[in-house]
Each structure stands twice: as structure tokens, then as C-alpha cells.
Length: 513
Image (cartoon, rainbow, N blue to C red; front, side, top):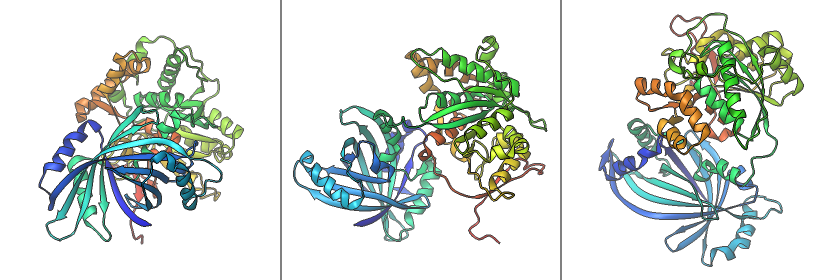
């Protein structure tokens, strides 16, 4: 049995990967580290799991790895995460006979590694990696480390290629500090994204969907939103995801006023109802509150109506509105489904704070709160210090934060902030939308219409020919929590600062006095 630590980095835009690979493999020196040579080869990994992917859920891997003419049976288990690194326990055995005759032996040995009961295993995926390995040696010490530049192709047992990804992998020798330093150099030079997820886990949701394993009992959610282009994208994602059941969409003033937010929500529902071959259970839509203190909206970003101007030509939406307001509806649904409903809030937290004030007992029945809001280690987008949603109503955000802490009742409510620190890493490029639209995809054509102004704003201001997926990532996190790596902090929200109003502070001091 061997222990290994590795650091993985992926790309914000995979189209840049080949050029960055070329730079890394041909550059002789980077930041005091010398390129001592490279070698290239192909690795073929045949993954085995139970039909319901039990091993994947347990963070375990059973695979047969082929390098050249040699084959190895490997069992890997992620046992701990050390900062940005993943730590694995690995067992390896040579295989000399044909692969498929080895399945009974694989199952027998696997039983000593992890308990699967009476479940059988089968071939679920083949991962073919075109690898360039480079040894980097520090000019200031004799030690070094390996870097892998991997082009990864995922293939089903039917030989259908379902995905291609790129990653940079740094293999850490014992007691090495070089990987830490080199990782920071790569992050600063190329803007790569550090992750801990393995090649297999990054494909797991797609694999589950292909194998029909996403049905189950969907999670009940309430979307509290201020549509808004990225809110609209989040609604499209939520309504097309079998993993969640949208009970209601409540609207709040933020990107635009609450009434326009409700109208935009109804327009999106009108569009979904026209999609052939799909049946959507239309959620209840209820209009909510405006913050007590007037703040600047985001029509400069999202367009005059919040949807790039398309609502001005839409006419009166046909999707009905609830007679009760957002706060009443949220309280009613939480009482009806105690500890079953997750609220995904992608606008200012005005409605949620009002619900806490008016019906706190109902709010204590929420399963979890997931908030697209805040920025903790980077710059804001409404001010240097603050993210838009929190800045729009910081007092309500503070009410929600303190309520979830349970200071008065000792009952803690899970609260997760999906902030700009992670949402800026997820981007939708204009050419992807246009490519799908050119093929006649109706959703892409709809997105192309309402997102044009939004994407123009980012192209003009940041040189990004596309947009960030702020609100869709909050929905995506509820659908698949492995999309993000959650870290726990004590958080405070500034409500009185002249310049820092709406700032979210995560206390990450190693020593707190």
C-alpha cells in the first residue's frame, strides 16, 4: 500500500489548454525551476464499479491501468484532503492474463478493500489520457517534482466518447515544498483553477445521467430570485434538472424592481411551456419585497428590463401569479414540508429576512439555505469590497446570517455562500451559445436573445466574450455539491461602513485572539 499526494489544476477555458501545454513543455526555466526533460505516453484506465456506482460515491476507484504492454489492477481511496491537495491510499497488483477473464478476481480482491455486500461489478467507463510528463528541478536545491500535462478522453463501454478535459497534475514527493511554490506560479501565470476532484469524479454526474441514476427522489427547492439574466439561466437549469423539484419561485427587487422580476420569471415559464416533448410542473410564482433602503439596480448590466430588452416585446405573460406574497408562500411551503426544502437565494436577502421576522418558526423548518452572494478573498462587483446581492440589502443579509447561527434558539441552520470567489471561475462563452443556436436548439436561441446585452457588458468591461454563471452555480451546487469545495468560516457582514457597506468577512486567521 502506498500513500500519495497530488495537486490538480484545470483551465477556465479548455481551448487555451493546448497552447499552455506547449509553453510548459518547451520552456526551459519557470520561476527558478528548470525543465529537466519530458516524456510522452498514453495511459488507458478501465474503470469498474457496481451498476449504481457505489464505489464512486465512496470516493473509491477500481481500475485496470494499461501503460504500454503492462497492465495493473489498482484500488485507490481518497482518505483526506490536505488544503488544495488530495491524499490517496493506493494498492496496485500486476495483471498478466486477458482483462475480461480477470473480473471475478478483481471482485474478490476488491472485497478486501471495501465492503460492497453482494453487489457485482462491471465495466462502466474507459479513460484514455495522452500524457506529457516533465521533471522540474529547483535551481536552489537538488529536489524536484513531476508535472503531468493530461489530455483526457472519456469513453463509454459502447466506445462512445462523452467528454474531453485537460488538467495539470503535480505529484508531490514526501516533505517537498517545491510543489506549493510552483503551484502558485502556475496560478499567477495562467489563471488555472485548483481542484481536488479526480478525473473520474469530474465525469461522475454525466455518467450517472447516462446510466439513468439521477431519478430518485428530487430535492425540494424554493428559488428566491431577482431575474436578471443569470437568474434566468439558473431557472432554465433548475427546471431541466431531474435532481430537484422547484416548488416555487419568489421574486425580490435587486437587478430590477420586484414587479419586473416577477414578470421576467413568468416570461421564462412561458418559454418553457412551449418546449415540445417536455412537460414541466410549473412552480408557484409570488412577488416579494424591495429593500428598505433604495440601492442602485443592475439594469446597466442586464438591460432595461433585466432580460436584455426582450420583455418589452413579449406582451402580457400567460403564466399566473400567486395571490399571496413571497413571504407568505415561503412560510407556507416550509411548514408543509418541514426540513425538506432548500432555499436557493440568488438575489438580495430581503424576502428571507422578512420571513424570519414574520414567521421564524416556519423558517426554522428550512433544510438549508444556499445563497449566491458575498465575496470573501477577492474584489467585489458592486464596490471594491462588496458583492451586488449583499450590498443591495446588507441589513437583511445580516439578519439571515445571525438567524442561521441559532444564537437565540441553539438551532443551527446550514447556510452556504456561493460567492464571487467561485462564480467567476464558471463562464458561458458567446460562441458556445451561438454554436448551439445555429443547430436550431430552441433554448440556445432563447438564451442568445436575452443574454446578448449581458454578454456585451462583460466584453466591453472585462474583455470576456460571454458571461459569468453566478446564479446557475448556486443551483448547480444543490444539484451536485461536488461542483464546489465547501470550506467553513465564521462570517460577518458589514452594515455601517461608508465604503465597506455589504462587505462579507470570512475569519480565516490561523490564530484568533
